[in-house]
Image (cartoon, rainbow, N blue to C red; front, side, top):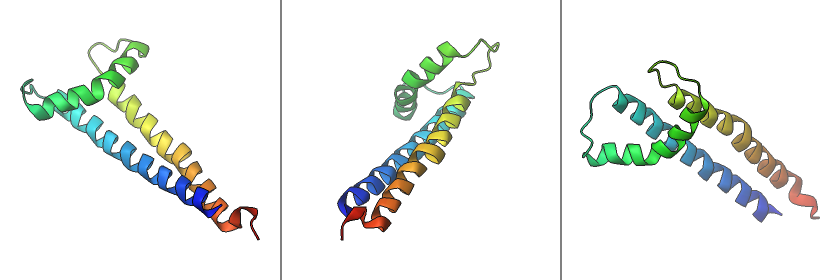
Length: 105
């Protein structure tokens, strides 16, 4: 059962790292939006391609705030929630499974 426990811990760690990276990408996109970036810059194009699908979905749900885009904040709060609830729960479950021995003698 320790293999399953180690697998769950590894999945939780990888998911935590990926969510943290995406959080920084969202922050970079928000900072870029404050200036007039060159749309042909590869970094700007990457940031837009990586974040626009999720940001546009959130924008459709949020009410119009008169030019104020709160979608990055909503996504950052969602990422924080996932890290603190879902990822922490997977870690906890994996470590409990590992410490209990999974019922093996």
